Image 1: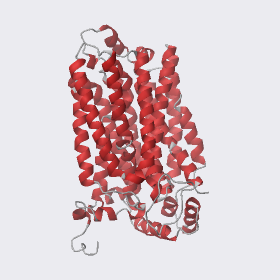
Image 2 (image 1 turned 90 degrees about the horizontal axis):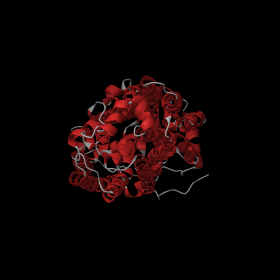
Image 3 (image 1 turned 135 degrees about the vertical axis):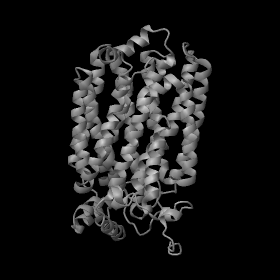
Image 4 (image 1 turned 90 degrees about the vertical axis):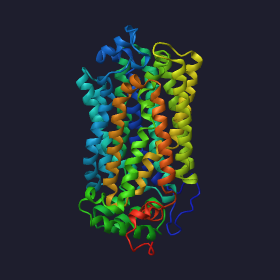
Length: 506
């Protein structure tokens, strides 16, 4: 059964097939990993603004917030132990994504997704039942292990299952689920905060088990991608039948031939993490790491992790700050949906550019308002507080149709099959490393740089937008197993990937 597409593709005429219901349902199940990722991002900022949670695990932070009138508005939440609760997730993910790479390459995308789901379930149970800070951190670490597996395997799964002219929209479904996860977490926090007891944060943390259960059960029934089937065995006929099934046609010869060629190259690679450092893979490696770095220095995870804390800093009460975070989550989810509709029509570069301009302007204005109106010991008026909320929504919308979904889409589609699993592991590890660094340092930075924090991130947005315009080639409509050609035709990268004497052939 074929599904009407988001855009009209005009890609490779030799590639037949349509977006089928089978592919759509499979990708919806796999994208549940994004729902858990988003929930874990959103839930931590909410529970760390709840007084029962702070009283149990971080009593000193709560005392400073309530009693210390001398402390700056920007420094009330500055606690390395508190930030460790948020950032421990990412160190665990960073370590285990490399282990996930060998599982994904040797056993397939499906087992990695399943392993991630199980780790999520155990981590959610420990978090909800935590009796002390060590049990709390252990739960976060297990959630991080789950992220290491799912964030390594799911973007690959989505890119390989999707037809080339719908790949952007399908892969952006992962980020849409991240946005829905953040929104769900904000809604849960807003509701549970009203309980005013330990049940509030326990319910918030334990409910991560709901999407984890959906992913774990759903992954049991997921089909394996043709790319993975052909990579792991010589049963080419089985892979071809799966390709015919997901494309909804028997005429898949052109695409299957490209898969076979890519697999032959892949089989010759014994050490993909060594191979990926070779000159011909330099653009993909640089781009994957740079995009993950830039995605984090947009400052988005600062907003996602600490939105309730940030809104309390500018003068909103506990309930108002959590409601404001819900509003931000709604805006982010809606903007990601818009990105899904436009990414295969307008292309990756256009969305990167528009989102970058939007984020830069909003961050500079937010920083200016906080510098002029908040100060160390004052409060923003209600009018200015809500203006900051509107500007943060504009900023989040810019991220949600650019660096949010495209930060995962572009790295998942640019690596050749022989280094794809290794490349995705490096992408995920870079993301977790930079996320950890920003999460661990933000409250310290906010205390030292104060409103200058927003100018800091705004400056990076200007740099990354220029980087994309100069160095990222457009990848829309390019079949995933023919992606190496975009680097050979790029004004800068062709000097690196094209061997001397081969220019005329290219």
